Length: 226
Length: 396
Ligand SMILES: Nc1ncnc2c1ncn2[C@@H]1O[C@H](COP(=O)(O)OP(=O)(O)OP(=O)(O)O)[C@@H](O)[C@H]1O
Ligand SMILES: [Mg+2]
Image 1: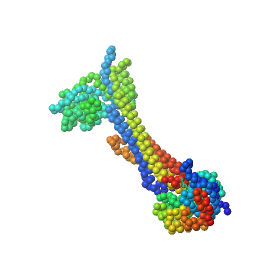
Image 2: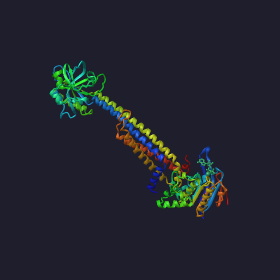
Image 3: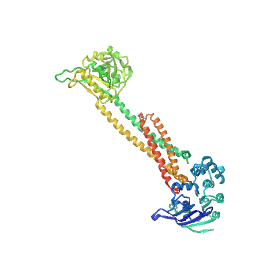
Image 4: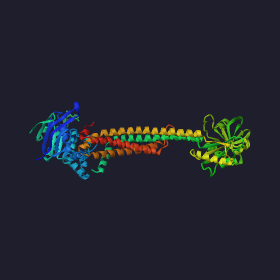
């Protein structure tokens, strides 16, 4: 089986000179297709930095990131946006829904940029919302939804394009136990349907859902616990 | 990804935040309206000044007799000369009124008054001097032909001789000859030292009969078709009079073209043009800064949204398109409302000035504001679209 994500000697430096922060210092990571991985580590160790690069939201300062065997460093801006749209579903800790826009429209958003026709778009968005248990909240705006509901809308948005990879940065970080359980249940099901899932968490119970846990210490992988 | 979808995003973006869209529209509206209005006020003030100068008669030539040179005889200015000045050979002359004037003392009852100027002329004289009748009537050509003893008096004469009395129809003694007052002129106010209202105007024939005799005319007052046609009119008048008086060398008459007033008019107009231009420039600048400000605020607030859109795979072109369409709609809508507000506002008198719309200013204000709105609505957005998604998402 070929790795879907392959990271070699990944480096990321914020700023320059005296104030430079080396968030990633030569990180190696391989994720096989269909894997479910939890990334753990102390605050500031570089987890989010890593995940943003994996999600093509940011570019590394050094090293290689191969997605499906292709070096993302050679992609231009248009190709990267295509990748984000087709291959990757990203779930943020802070939801990042478009404000003043209904749940349905938020979930439809990636499909619009993918060029899916209106009727089909609606159908798929409704199916995704149904999957996260929000069929009755399609016309609510983010400020009319609870945190857990907002996060589920965000997950519906991440999975509506049927991406090969779902990346989630502390998806339960802002949620209570019940909401967390629901969100994790959805991610479990996504993984069960063959998607690769990488999530960041601080909680062992959350990490327990994953097949393996990657520990990040000071911008490097410290060890892989099975 | 069709343009239609992007336009739908733009419309939804505008309607999703009505407050913000409303404020932006208002900013552009105020910018456009204030430019249009300020320029209209400047223009109104300018034309008011021009009108008041025109009221003093910038399109008037006065011809007066000149003493003869030694060795030649001077011909007097005659009524026939005046009549000859209007015709095919002088297309730029509208009227030419023969004028005689005299000193006269008027009396009514026990009251007497030395009239500043007693003028004998024809009914065109009133038009030439921009005199309007306030009460009663002017005299007619028929009155001139019949040499009726009628008189139209200025407001000073009316108040001096007829305090609290309606002068119309009253018999006024002029140098002991009775004249019937048929009209009172509207007050013009004094221009300089002279009281323009201390006068009486009677038919030329009557005045010659009763007061001055049939010598030379005091003046021929020529009204040109317009102030601009004055030089042409003067040339035509000169040609005609030179022919009639058989002038070879120095003329036996003098034409006063009121050069000073013309110069004054030109200077004033130029001052106003400069003033107008600076008012326009300043208001465009102020309006432009306002629009820039609100557009920048609007876009900055939405950089996070741009980040979200990029994160789910929006290509740069679609984000650019969306913000360009949003900015275009806001600019056009705000601009149109601004034009409406400016045009409506210019119907009202502002600080005593009746604004006069300058059509080109409407176009200028609209175009400049729309372009500024477009630029500052889409340029920051295009910069944000170039950010990496995570940078846009982190933007505060
Ligand atoms: N945009 C940035 N500019 C400068 N420094 C940054 C930036 N983003 C992150 N860093 C720094 O990089 C380091 C790693 O940050 P990162 O967000 O990856 O940590 P993390 O492991 O996700 O922490 P947490 O568990 O608290 O979310 C930190 O020291 C942080 O201060
Ligand atoms: Mg983090």
